[in-house]
Length: 365
Ligand SMILES: *Cc1c(COP(=O)(O)O)cnc(C)c1O
Image (cartoon, rainbow, N blue to C red; front, side):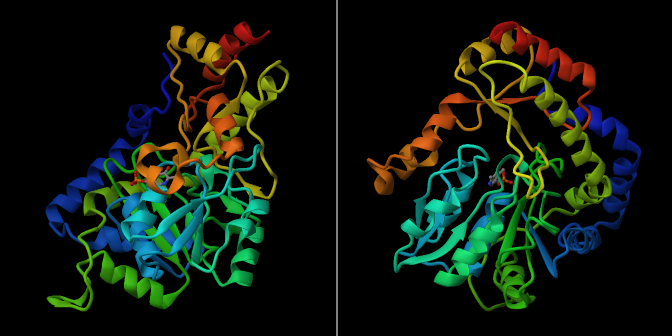
């Protein structure tokens, strides 16, 4: 049995520190926007090289708050990728704006920057690239297009905590970066959590208000906001894990490179492509194969966890049928039909990687 992620095994290695931190936070009883939340925001901002980090309740809220703080409104259009988790595009719809899906690059699975300009209209306000599976989108090209057309850029960093594009961390390049601390993410807590990063002071101030009922001073509400705060206990856990994020991501990269060296030698399998523009942190290890279903069956029989991220691109989802009917995005559709994600987590051993590889080798060669 090999799982997709091993949260239990990781907790055992962090238990002493997490348990004592939680006990202290319980004794302190400062549960809402308490000292651990404040310390985590400072430590995360420092790690990511940004001026401001504003934590919130989850990654979906991070996107929603950033879209609202950026001033995106009803009827505006926002360009994004169809090959992502639905939350990226849900956030656009929450403010009444319309997601415009641009097809992906067949190698990186990120938005195809050569197709963005054709999708820009007078109503376009922003681009939301997703650093899918932990590999940064092509941010130089995206920022150049955005500058030329006066568009805002909001990075979806839910899968890329610790990834770099050139010498910049993801989440430090656009107007805002949106992070998720869902338990299985590269930096995960033990429940829900999220954060927006920005170098724009006005944006940061609006985000701080939005996450706390539109308030700067208690019981003075300047705008209609939300209750979307990071929990003090989750912040304790995140502080323990943030100290080890480089080591965790290095473990993912090590396992990924072992997979790729072997898979590159097998017929009918395309290992994930690293574009060499920064650091891929392998939130997922996702291969392509015309024999995807055969490989998946063999892995299931060997009790090796696996998953299809994502089986249905967003332009083909019922939830977006009103604006996407008849739209064809062939690369996304092809990738959705051939992609398969293998177990990947920092503690994955060489022996486990080899066990997965043996099963795949058995059905493709
Ligand atoms: C996980 C994820 C989100 C949403 O994060 P939650 O914390 O689960 O709300 C958004 N975008 C992408 C690409 C994700 O993978």
